[in-house]
Length: 173
Image (cartoon, rainbow, N blue to C red):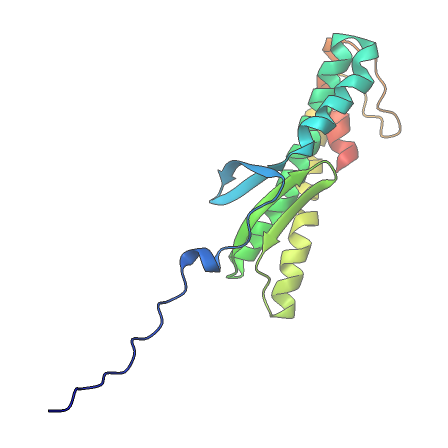
Protein backbone atom coordinates (compact mmCIF):
# COMPACT_ATOMS: atom_id res chain seq x y z
CA UNK A 1 0.00 0.00 0.00
CA UNK A 2 1.19 3.41 -1.01
CA UNK A 3 1.34 6.31 1.51
CA UNK A 4 -1.17 9.11 0.85
CA UNK A 5 0.50 12.39 0.18
CA UNK A 6 -1.25 15.47 1.40
CA UNK A 7 -0.63 19.01 0.23
CA UNK A 8 1.23 21.19 2.68
CA UNK A 9 -0.97 23.29 4.95
CA UNK A 10 -1.53 26.90 3.87
CA UNK A 11 0.73 29.47 5.49
CA UNK A 12 -0.68 31.06 8.62
CA UNK A 13 -2.28 34.47 8.17
CA UNK A 14 0.01 37.37 8.97
CA UNK A 15 0.07 38.14 12.65
CA UNK A 16 -1.62 41.29 13.80
CA UNK A 17 1.82 42.59 14.78
CA UNK A 18 2.89 42.46 11.13
CA UNK A 19 -0.04 44.73 10.24
CA UNK A 20 0.70 47.26 12.95
CA UNK A 21 2.60 50.47 12.19
CA UNK A 22 6.08 50.70 13.69
CA UNK A 23 6.20 51.90 17.29
CA UNK A 24 6.75 55.59 17.96
CA UNK A 25 10.41 56.09 18.66
CA UNK A 26 11.42 58.58 21.33
CA UNK A 27 7.85 58.99 22.54
CA UNK A 28 5.47 57.66 25.13
CA UNK A 29 1.77 56.99 24.81
CA UNK A 30 -0.06 59.60 26.86
CA UNK A 31 -3.72 58.83 26.25
CA UNK A 32 -6.29 57.88 23.67
CA UNK A 33 -8.86 60.34 22.30
CA UNK A 34 -11.74 59.04 20.15
CA UNK A 35 -9.87 55.73 20.09
CA UNK A 36 -6.77 57.36 18.55
CA UNK A 37 -3.58 57.03 20.62
CA UNK A 38 -1.75 60.26 21.46
CA UNK A 39 2.01 60.09 21.89
CA UNK A 40 4.23 62.71 23.54
CA UNK A 41 7.78 63.10 22.27
CA UNK A 42 10.54 62.93 24.89
CA UNK A 43 11.62 66.49 24.05
CA UNK A 44 8.35 68.05 25.25
CA UNK A 45 9.51 68.25 28.88
CA UNK A 46 12.75 69.81 27.62
CA UNK A 47 10.72 72.40 25.70
CA UNK A 48 8.60 73.16 28.76
CA UNK A 49 11.71 73.41 30.91
CA UNK A 50 13.27 75.83 28.41
CA UNK A 51 10.12 77.98 28.43
CA UNK A 52 10.10 78.05 32.23
CA UNK A 53 13.80 78.94 32.42
CA UNK A 54 13.43 81.78 29.94
CA UNK A 55 10.53 83.21 31.95
CA UNK A 56 11.94 82.52 35.44
CA UNK A 57 13.48 85.99 35.60
CA UNK A 58 9.92 87.31 35.96
CA UNK A 59 9.39 85.17 39.04
CA UNK A 60 6.63 82.67 39.70
CA UNK A 61 4.13 84.52 37.51
CA UNK A 62 6.54 84.22 34.56
CA UNK A 63 6.74 80.45 35.03
CA UNK A 64 2.94 80.25 35.31
CA UNK A 65 2.61 82.21 32.07
CA UNK A 66 5.11 79.90 30.34
CA UNK A 67 3.25 76.75 31.41
CA UNK A 68 -0.09 78.25 30.37
CA UNK A 69 1.36 79.31 27.01
CA UNK A 70 2.56 75.75 26.38
CA UNK A 71 -0.87 74.38 27.39
CA UNK A 72 -2.71 76.69 24.95
CA UNK A 73 -0.20 75.92 22.20
CA UNK A 74 -0.51 72.16 22.54
CA UNK A 75 -4.27 72.30 22.94
CA UNK A 76 -4.39 74.12 19.60
CA UNK A 77 -2.01 71.66 17.95
CA UNK A 78 -3.97 68.69 19.32
CA UNK A 79 -7.29 70.01 18.02
CA UNK A 80 -5.66 70.69 14.62
CA UNK A 81 -4.27 67.15 14.37
CA UNK A 82 -7.56 65.60 15.43
CA UNK A 83 -9.23 67.58 12.67
CA UNK A 84 -7.14 65.54 10.22
CA UNK A 85 -7.81 62.27 12.07
CA UNK A 86 -11.57 62.67 12.35
CA UNK A 87 -11.83 63.70 8.70
CA UNK A 88 -9.86 60.59 7.71
CA UNK A 89 -12.28 58.44 9.69
CA UNK A 90 -15.25 60.27 8.16
CA UNK A 91 -14.12 59.37 4.62
CA UNK A 92 -13.62 55.74 5.63
CA UNK A 93 -9.89 55.68 6.37
CA UNK A 94 -7.98 54.84 9.52
CA UNK A 95 -6.35 57.32 11.87
CA UNK A 96 -3.47 55.53 13.56
CA UNK A 97 -1.95 58.01 16.01
CA UNK A 98 -1.11 61.60 16.89
CA UNK A 99 2.40 62.62 17.93
CA UNK A 100 2.94 65.89 19.80
CA UNK A 101 6.41 67.37 19.89
CA UNK A 102 7.94 70.88 20.28
CA UNK A 103 7.66 71.69 16.57
CA UNK A 104 3.95 70.87 16.45
CA UNK A 105 2.07 67.68 15.80
CA UNK A 106 1.86 64.81 13.38
CA UNK A 107 -1.32 62.92 12.59
CA UNK A 108 -0.60 59.51 11.09
CA UNK A 109 -3.54 58.50 8.92
CA UNK A 110 -4.07 56.04 6.11
CA UNK A 111 -4.81 58.49 3.32
CA UNK A 112 -7.64 57.88 0.89
CA UNK A 113 -6.88 57.38 -2.79
CA UNK A 114 -9.73 59.59 -3.96
CA UNK A 115 -8.38 63.15 -4.56
CA UNK A 116 -11.55 64.75 -3.16
CA UNK A 117 -11.26 62.76 0.08
CA UNK A 118 -7.54 63.54 0.32
CA UNK A 119 -8.36 67.25 0.10
CA UNK A 120 -10.99 66.88 2.83
CA UNK A 121 -8.48 65.22 5.17
CA UNK A 122 -5.78 67.79 4.37
CA UNK A 123 -8.08 70.79 4.85
CA UNK A 124 -9.73 69.54 8.04
CA UNK A 125 -6.76 70.43 10.28
CA UNK A 126 -6.56 74.10 9.25
CA UNK A 127 -10.37 74.32 9.27
CA UNK A 128 -10.35 73.73 13.03
CA UNK A 129 -8.72 77.12 13.55
CA UNK A 130 -11.85 79.05 12.59
CA UNK A 131 -14.03 77.78 15.46
CA UNK A 132 -11.06 77.96 17.86
CA UNK A 133 -10.50 81.61 16.93
CA UNK A 134 -14.18 82.35 17.50
CA UNK A 135 -13.98 80.70 20.94
CA UNK A 136 -10.92 82.74 21.89
CA UNK A 137 -12.60 85.96 20.69
CA UNK A 138 -15.67 85.23 22.82
CA UNK A 139 -13.53 84.37 25.85
CA UNK A 140 -11.37 87.46 25.29
CA UNK A 141 -14.44 89.70 25.25
CA UNK A 142 -15.26 88.51 28.78
CA UNK A 143 -11.92 89.66 30.26
CA UNK A 144 -12.71 93.36 30.57
CA UNK A 145 -9.56 94.27 28.65
CA UNK A 146 -9.83 95.67 25.12
CA UNK A 147 -9.01 93.23 22.31
CA UNK A 148 -5.74 94.42 20.79
CA UNK A 149 -4.41 92.21 18.05
CA UNK A 150 -1.08 93.98 17.76
CA UNK A 151 0.19 93.62 21.32
CA UNK A 152 -0.05 90.74 23.77
CA UNK A 153 1.50 92.81 26.52
CA UNK A 154 -0.63 93.56 29.52
CA UNK A 155 0.72 93.90 33.05
CA UNK A 156 2.15 90.57 34.19
CA UNK A 157 -0.14 89.93 37.09
CA UNK A 158 -2.43 87.08 37.94
CA UNK A 159 -5.56 89.11 37.14
CA UNK A 160 -4.45 89.50 33.52
CA UNK A 161 -3.48 85.84 33.01
CA UNK A 162 -6.90 84.98 31.59
CA UNK A 163 -6.75 87.90 29.12
CA UNK A 164 -3.21 86.98 28.13
CA UNK A 165 -4.18 83.34 27.51
CA UNK A 166 -7.06 84.50 25.32
CA UNK A 167 -4.65 86.67 23.34
CA UNK A 168 -2.22 83.76 22.97
CA UNK A 169 -5.09 81.57 21.72
CA UNK A 170 -6.03 84.22 19.16
CA UNK A 171 -2.42 84.73 18.11
CA UNK A 172 -1.73 81.01 17.66
CA UNK A 173 -4.89 80.52 15.63
